Length: 94
Image (tube, rainbow, N blue to C red; front, side):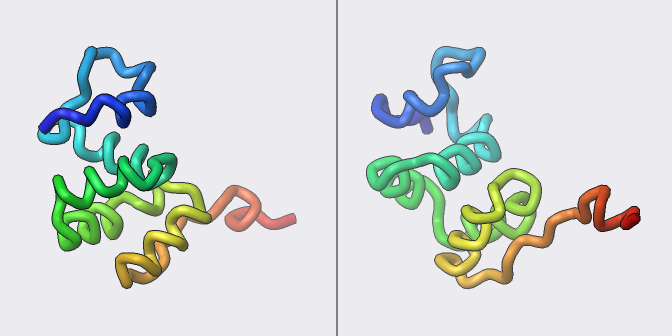
């Protein structure tokens, strides 16, 4: 499933001319959850079901979304906040 023309603005750097949801799902979901507008998110939720988005969130959100976006989408999808790996300062406090 190819992206709508308006959504492609978020993928200007993409190597191929048209990102495709079936091939590039992790990147597309990440970009749309992080930077997408209402039209982008309507397209995403029509292309993927809520359980599919929730599964993506649980598997990838901690590494692929900002803290703020992860907290927001965790509430929307009714999932616990994504766990982040500890920072260097947390591992080696001085």
